[in-house]
Image (cartoon, rainbow, N blue to C red; front, side, top):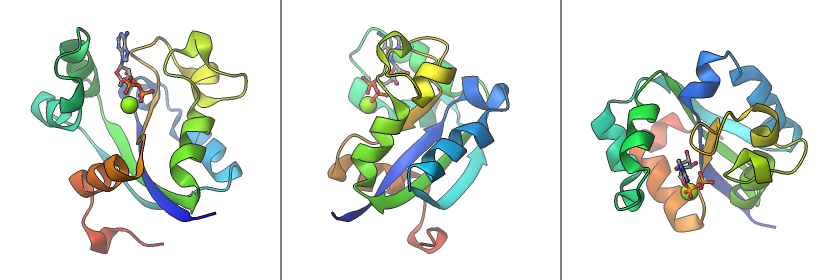
Length: 140
Ligand code: ADP
Ligand code: MG
């Protein structure tokens, strides 16, 4: 298995409910290592740039408002198959479809306010990590 890095975001619904530690415990228990991390408050424009792939979707404006509504924790997770493993620990986008024990099954409030983001492929992981972190800030 290849060692990978992926971008993770703990979203506003979760930071507001003080769930950062509980969520990160799940990543660490799954063998993922947090190799970079910061708490930031995105502007709507910064959230819009990050999620620009969804610009044509009906929920885009609501998503950008939500992501700018409170602080987020952006972080880089590293480990074997980290991109897929992160998505597995997160669970399905809609918490109603998320497998028991996953972050979204346990903590998400709705399909929009679903507690975590995770990169979906190697190329997007590299782009998303570079959006938030300089190489010198990632300490594996
Ligand atoms: P994922 O975060 O699982 O990769 P997507 O990339 O499809 O999911 O969507 C990005 C984010 O947009 C979701 O995590 C969620 O916050 C929001 N979203 C997706 N679908 C909807 C929807 N039908 N209504 C509201 N928000 C949505
Ligand atoms: Mg996605």
